[in-house]
Image 1 (cartoon, rainbow, N blue to C red):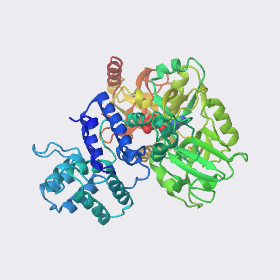
Image 2: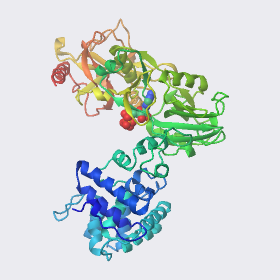
Image 3: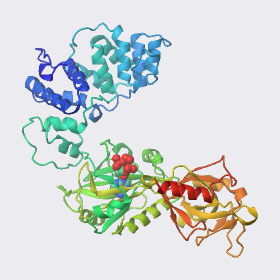
Length: 600
Ligand code: ATP
């Protein structure tokens, strides 16, 4: 294997793509630190030979970060079709089959299934007339990729791919395909590549998400960047929450008071505003301004924001979660609805769902970065600088806690409302870009599940919702079958409740399937039902009810339900149409499950 110092360099004044390919071939085969060293000498050689502008190669090594080429629209299937066309393969030939069904392991002859670029290489190689070392310049490749990025149809794709086929070697085409698919798979992380390129590259990328800027600001590997600051209209990498087990959280908070926030199920979004000009970016720095609006007359959100900022605010950067909100139901809709709602620019009386920006942080105010200020302070500024506008923008509220029971009861509430979970924050924490530190913690009930898919419970009762949801059910009560009832009559022991949350479509499905609810009367409890302290508003006879599959963290003792046990964090999964009151989970089965799960 050649060391990168030995990579034969041509005397061409222009860098060739084949030089990069040779490096990619070598580095793929190396392991551990050797990979990093290869990259170091590659950059060193490159700079020595071609100068300090490495953007033309950086965008090829990190194609997924190239914000100037995000529109190839070419996944494996389009590439396969285009190559079949360019190579003139007949549709039902073995090679066409291999390209189209690249994932499928074929006969033993072809062991490369699963990696499209390698399959394509094997199909291309015997048909290519380009031999020897590739002679095409890096500039040509970058220009062609720009053309491909702007292409809008099959014919244009075909022209570019034909150019690749007739001018580039098969190995080069393999790497071009990987670049187009935006995954080189050379075993070097984004972090390592940045580190090797320049010691300040990661920091700078965190505040601007802009590869071109990094390559131009950090041209000289020896000149340090003074201070990396976030800037208006440059998307930064937001602070992230770390998953931590509930029992470890109090220790991490040093026994001090912490904040408990709702974990919202939408899309992380940052809003940059300067004198009435707005931009929105996702966590991955994708522009969403075209949906939400660049100024007060546009978009599905900005048009409602003209009077929400304090008059002294000229510049601000907010961090939060964009959710879809349905005004008529007073509910957040599932994440799946967000894009439709965000794209809808109409202003009509019939419209009830809008994008709602739930703001939980502010990182920049009137020319100043405030990342170093404690969360408490940032949040109090947020409250004084932004006026909530119902249905469009609001500052997220928090509860306080200092012990484990605060966490479990907050998670209980979140589960009943079918929220995703909770986020715990240290009020003294400063804002750390692109990091998961112990000061923001996420807790999802899913992390705690120990019971598997083994609980199929009979629905025996329900409670009405509150407020605008008073005419729908807010929760359902479930029961276990009791095989030891006197006279062997069917009998059910109340066991748990699960919430329908704000927008549980399945809640409606259950209500649609169950028709004959009767009001629960404390003085006339039917003999098939045994309740604990928790009494439902309405009940349903077992023969007219349904069985639901429920998941939960664990089984714990209680006096609220007749079974003497209940589920911790129960969540509805689906209706079991194949089961009924005769085959739903029994008390004994639950007890066995409890033993099994606690002995795990
Ligand atoms: P991650 O985003 O942490 O890589 P993921 O994509 O699976 O993991 P989740 O684990 O579901 O996402 O949650 C993390 C996300 O939660 C954050 O990126 C953020 O968008 C979102 N989030 C929701 N509510 C909050 C909140 N109150 N504070 C901070 N982040 C929140």
